[in-house]
Image 1 (cartoon, rainbow, N blue to C red):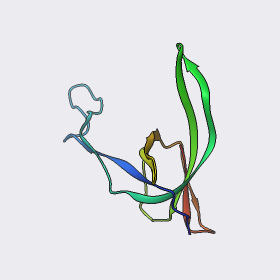
Image 2 (cartoon, helix red, strand yellow):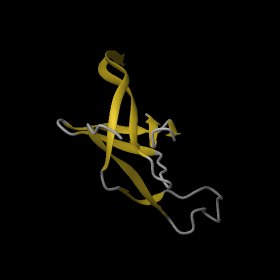
Image 3 (cartoon, rainbow, N blue to C red):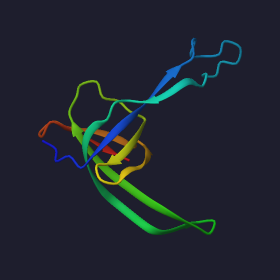
Image 4 (spheres, rainbow, N blue to C red):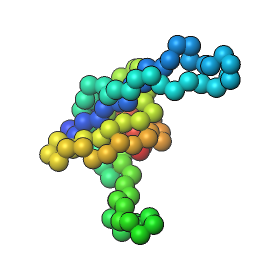
Length: 110
């Protein structure tokens, strides 16, 4: 059981047909990109820093553990994380998706 403090949305991509360009042999870019329905989640910041600077600009550096209820067909490359109170936190690439069978959850590391 998760204690919901946010939601995630999975980035869905519709590929061109055929997926591989026959002339070059390279994959074609996605034709359409959209977000899935919100999935309830619990997230915890693993690492959070407002002190990072890139080329003189202040940048927020954050890494999160996101827990969702286990579902057999879950796969994601990129997710949008939203807080229930403040709204969108950001869009993140999924580093690791680890099933936690003892508690019936999946842990996403972003």
